[in-house]
Length: 215
Image (cartoon, rainbow, N blue to C red; front, side):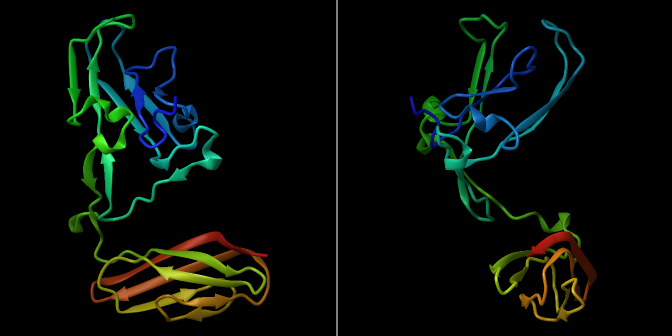
């Protein structure tokens, strides 16, 4: 009864006419709902006809998808070079009430990968290809270290050959450190923080508008 807790299985209907776009085989149907998943179709053929169908969807992977709901789930952290388990199957049914199918194409070596994550295929999450990047891209993250002292830690996540950093914290102060820690002197709910990075290949900036809120 706990099928899918560690290996989520999405049964996707193509097209989904009069039914949900996907059924989660297991005890966590919430995993196919917003904000964890969503889908959109585009096709012009009628039932029983051949044609082209375009399906765009996303799902959220979980290390543990609790039956109690998303509040108890553990979302997977997708990072470069991390190995994840993944598989997919194509089951060719001629109609909704079919008792058999004309084709069964499975990426995994074992069809029971729907309930056992160890039977999934291993994929390594590779970094974005260099040719898809701009020479320099500014990117950063932040976290509150101490809300009472209004202490915020900023982390540079920029791409490229970078030789200098300039942070504008949105309160009239700046920093040239790569990963600064900043103490705000007063509360602010509309801080516009900007990171500008510079290197031999140019300059880039990234602004977060009203993201860094300090009480």
